[in-house]
Image (tube, rainbow, N blue to C red):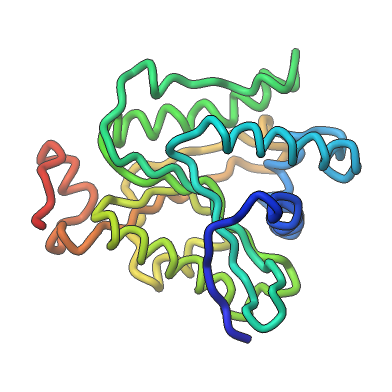
Length: 236
């Protein structure tokens, strides 16, 4: 199998998000997040998938920072994975960084979802504020392709993107994937987020590992060191 990570195109939207939903359903934290963000199993219906694809297309026409990538088996053209990231090439104002919440839910479902998501947004504000960086929302691989180098290809994509832009790359890992990222040179931050058991439906609280990949221009400086020094420019 030969894998390549390429920009997703408009005709790919349904297939790339099929990979997204399948990957999340196959991983414990992913399952929990889907249940919170899309309660009642709504993601399985054709009506939802069509509406989601249309909403995604509409968003692609508006966003100037969010990029969707597909991991493709070049011998079959099958999409086996997805990566979704915001690339902030310029500093942003507080208005540009405001928390939009979860507008597609209402009542207790929305309150629960925002109790889970708001700490993630608050942590990004604490760590980066308006700084230039890359935020990866999702890296997902079809269940049948997990353990077959697709995950490593997506992680390497993140490394390459970090080097091309010379920007730090940040994301929230899951307990089951953090080992792969650390093995490939990502740093685990001293800051943590803890999801309360009652919010995510588990027997105990869950710690979210926060990961950063620093570019070569940091010259070996860790993220925590860079942050403590006031975010100095990297060497070119």
